Image (cartoon, rainbow over all chains, first blue to last red; front, side, top):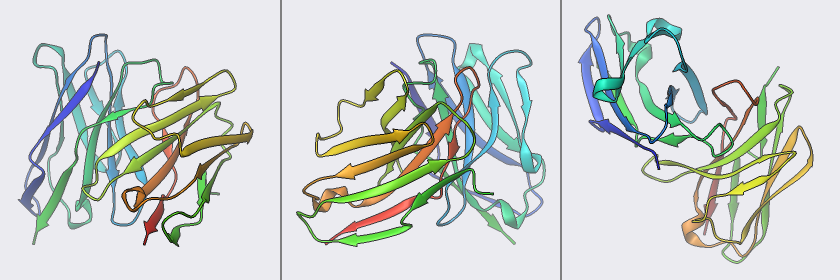
Length: 114
Length: 112
């Protein structure tokens, strides 16, 4: 069984400040980890993914995430928040070879204060 | 060009009706999925399907059935709609051996 926990259903940061969205996972096999972003009334867009190799993964829009096996974490960061980053962010895990679908966390709503 | 498309975008219907949501992907992917996003934005897998097998999440009522006329399409049929079926339904696709799924724009289903 696999699960994903996202700490904080809402995170508020000032424009220009560091963004940190937390994700912890549990998986009985080596996981493949993803971050997706959902803008209002839209579908999910893949931000970045970790499969194998380098544990620091860079994605689109200046986001990056680091896989830490010892901490079972895959936190998402961005050095400087922009107003356009306001959205819902989902962490997901796939340890079933793909066919079982993704297991998502409950999402974190990112609010950017001007 | 839209990679994963769904129709309709909005669907409003009465309890007890039968409805379908269509999904098409032009990415050449071999696996397609349906997810349900509830009012709290929680996303849950309903089905995954490739040309070999259909995997059904055990919590999905048998009123829901996926139909795949070909590799590029996975439609969702829902019989005897209930109030609790109101949600946003997302179609997604992926390629075996590659990680990450591409999502459609979603269909907001409202059951009155």
